[in-house]
Picture 1: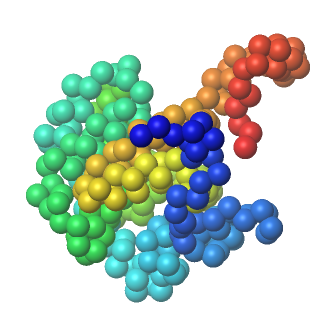
Picture 2: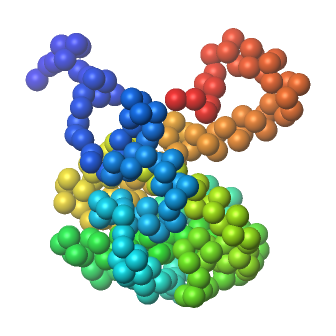
Length: 262
């Protein structure tokens, strides 16, 4: 069947594929929202664990509900020796997102409940990835620097444990708060490319690990989550403020993308 050129919506331009109730970009209130809450309020008033609960459950947790989530997360901490040995053989020059993507795929193939798509089964696996992905990132960080991974500490909170696994110590509360704020601001961004990718994969009734692996691949892209990395490369290329104007004019003349906008 042949289509007229005007019938093809390249890049899905002008097409509303679906909607999400989790997160919305709301210019009318100058805010990104999670479940109706302004992200600015969540970042300043909540721990990241509370925001995670909100995204999953649609409401902020009571103390009992938060304690339950934290207990479930701590129970799922710990990477298998098989995964750590596999990661030790990864190319140390590979992009960290490639390492993460491959490690999450490993989690899926080693989880006997991978194909359980019941709501309870999916929630369990979401908690499992929530606990283990920070461990994967921390272990990869240390291995790249010639150091052994540090096991998770079941007595520490989510953010405190991440720093412990990366550096062997927990920083000042002010640093933890800044990290919590960063995690909250990165937690959601409406119906973006990685969300679309994950939902497309899930719509085929594939497993949740496959959906997350696909989303990680999308998030890596420099026009999506990789944009902040591209900004850092751009700033390193500029070098110092005295060169900024000259660099920018040259980049515009060469029709290069200026990262960090939009």
